[in-house]
Amino acid sequence: MDNSFSEIKTFFGFGCMRLPMIGSEVDIEQFKEMTDYFLDNGFNYFDTAQCYIDGKSETAIKAALTSRYPREKYLLTDKLTEIYFEKQEDIRPFFQTQLDACGVEYFDFYLMHAQNAKNFEKYKKCKAYETAFELKKEGKIKHVGLSFHDKAEVLDNILSTYPEIEIVQIQFNYVDYEDPGVQSRKVWEVCRKHNKPVIVMEPVKGGSLIKLPDEAQKVFDSMENKLSNAGYAIRFAANQEGIRLVLSGMSDMAQMKDNVSFMKDFKPLTEDEKIAIAKVTAIYKGMDIIPCTSCHYCVEENHCPMNISIPELFACLNTKKVFNDWNQNDYYNEIVNKSGGSASSCVECGGCENVCPQHLEIRSLLKDVAAEFEK
Ligand code: SF4
Ligand code: SF4
Image 1: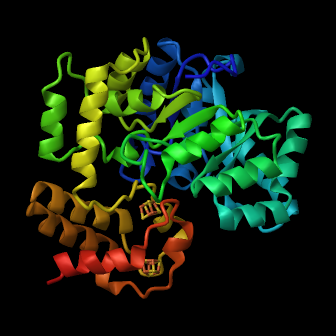
Image 2: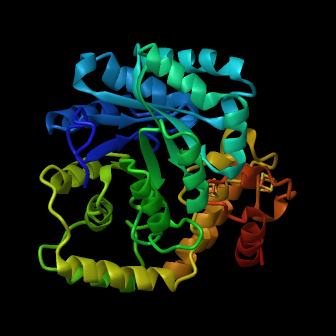
């Protein structure tokens, strides 16, 4: 753990990417209840971005949080996402739309979003970092940071180029800890080397570590003082040195209450819990699951011309593989009927792969999906 940034009251933050929904709209009443419960229990950190739920996360935050509580009661983080600017002059007007959408005069933290080798070049060219540092001087941003999805050496380069960066948000969970693609451990080590406090995202890997394969579930079920699966995953992340905060993308009040129950009075992992997590990791890694975190970046902003529900189709294949669940055949057809895009309708334009933070070979994986469900 890390105790820098004393304004962050605890080690746990509310990630507002997967809010409760009614159809395609955020369930504002439930979000208000969740917000109240979170604040009443002593937490104060909220995280959003304009690309979350097609802009509806920011406006929901205004409805549930910023219009109902005094500014000093909460901390709000927003992000500069690559799709919203082409040149330096675009950044300030975009930033203002974010302040307006959220209903605030400043952001406590502002992150250069989803940095990787490719888009870092664009951020440098458009002087995005320099613009954020200027906005900080003007008091519109309290702290500048970045969120990151690439290999460790890329982060090392970014932090060497911009040592003014104050905090780094990384993907960190027990399955990705030694993953050669995500490199959670190595990326975390780079943050330690540059002395940057860390915010963890995806501690439950987009929900994949909540619904575990039976064999893995039995390991946690056999624990004394058993917690929810989220309890092991989130505490694994919070347990590491240098971690300032773990974000959880809670989607309903039950998840909120569960998360608060083990993060309000955080207790480090016991030795037995560490052993259980190692066993679950080994089982999970042996199952050849598509490591999609269901972030939906690939299907937002019309990235897919064929309207293929990529994360839902991947989830179908994963669930069928892990649970031998034949209902997934019907579910696959239901999704395709609704969206109009089957896995085999992919025209291989590559638009989705350009924005996937997990660097998945989506075109090739869709062929696997088609082979399973379109026989
Ligand atoms: S490569 Fe296929 S799935 Fe990806 S955006 Fe293009 S058509 Fe859609
Ligand atoms: S395929 Fe990639 S971009 Fe699409 S939902 Fe999964 S992780 Fe996100």
